[in-house]
Amino acid sequence: PNLREGVGDALWMPQVGSIRNPRLMQALYKSITNEPLVSIIEESAVSGLVLKAGGVVGMTVKDKVIRADNVVVTAGAWSGNLLESIEVSLPVEPVRGQMILFNAKPGVVNRVVLSDGKYVIPRRDGRVLAGSTLEYVGFDKHTTEQAKQQLADTAIDMFPALAEAKIEHHWAGLRPGAPAGIPFIGGIPDIDNLYINAGHFRNGLVLAPAAVRVMTSLLLGQESPVDPKPYALKNRVLQPEIA
Image (cartoon, rainbow, N blue to C red):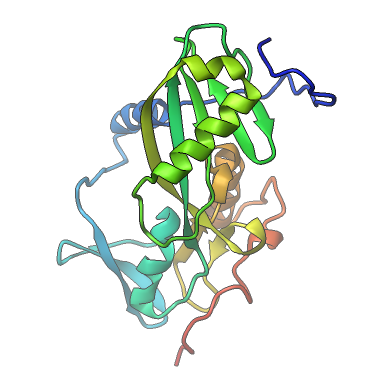
């Protein structure tokens, strides 16, 4: 309903849904805090990894070394920066995505709609999210008026009724882009105890359950439910020769 006239073809995918990722993270955080074997250290940037005898033995946090039997780097777009501390070059780069939020009435949009790489996502209160841009501008998270107008025009073209709704929020985030869109999941060759799970680009939430199962299987030496070879790091990263 309310989709613009003249749309001749569409693909209906009834199982597609949407997740408000901040709320998901809040739920995960609450769940993790109840785990006695998990410790969370907040507001503490990891400044580097500690390499010794051909393996990673921990990380530096606020000038303090936290030792670990295994280290998994899951720093999104910042993963490559962290690995530079041990001279490993991981081709994961930040890709800015800008989004806007319309304060619309319930019923104006009631389905997730994808078109030409853009999307509109309705919320239960009637608000409509429209996104998103793909911008290779480094670690710049600033928003731009040009992107705001482009996103608004695209969303209103899909749903003309959105022209009557006010844009109440405009923000940007950084996705972790990887070559050919293939994430990195696995151990760094020739460096013991160091693993990577990064580079999921626009599909982090979608791929997270399977990516975690692959990573967990590798750490525990178990059979993976998904073939890990396409995501392995061999021949995909540059690293110094280990003496």
